[in-house]
Length: 329
Image (tube, rainbow, N blue to C red; front, side, top):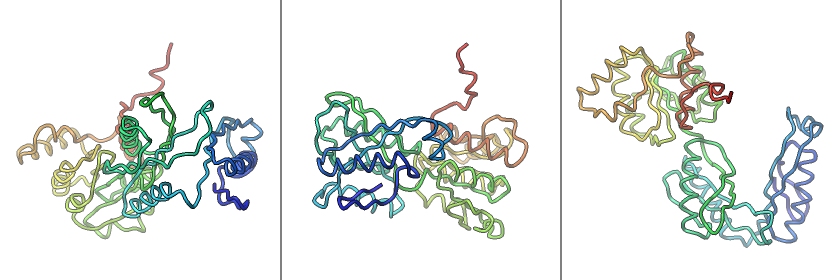
């Protein structure tokens, strides 16, 4: 939400109501003082229901002043805009004022790009390095978060906001499983790309939930695309002449997840063929086959669900086991 000094309002924090009214009041104070303010607004059951939420809770809102002379602020946001426009991803790190901290003006955000480059500073080299590591992890996992920085004079909270497209999900093979994969991948916030050599199968009309649909040699298209540690490559073509070159291309990238549809026997055969072609054992170990979590999948939709679940588990460094198994007795 933007609140100007001439009382104009653009956008909203929620869908209106008590939260937005409180933010507007705080914004007017911040515009006068120039000092940032962190609001903690509690919502009762009645307030939550009025906002369309299913339960009560608490929401934190950072209110900051931005003026025409804030060149560092404008330069930081312009660097984010330009990078995202080129298809990249970035994270802005904004320090949150502590409740007992003296009033002061907020500094421009630190910007970390998906290639590891950094723009700006939080005023401490060690804190910048810690924020960079956390930001790269945020881009891998997806989603903006408030995180605590441990370096510096004392621990402090900062808001890590992720900009740009979601983590890349490359699906090779325009079959029935891929239809549900594109839907689920889109739903969990990934940038879904479907690849297939057959134009009759790989059509935008058939895969409405894919952000990109490309017809051509999948191995060549993967080789030409940057697949970082946050990326997932999923092979559901179930075709030797497709799987072998695609796996070679995928293993040449930094993709954090590479999975192939098929039985254990078929997977072992393909890995053996790759080994005979000179692919080292440490690379072969990156290939997940059979693909997906063991949920007893039978239908194409269930197989797609197990695959996406494993992609998310790997991205979050989790085993994918049942949460109830960890419940204390």
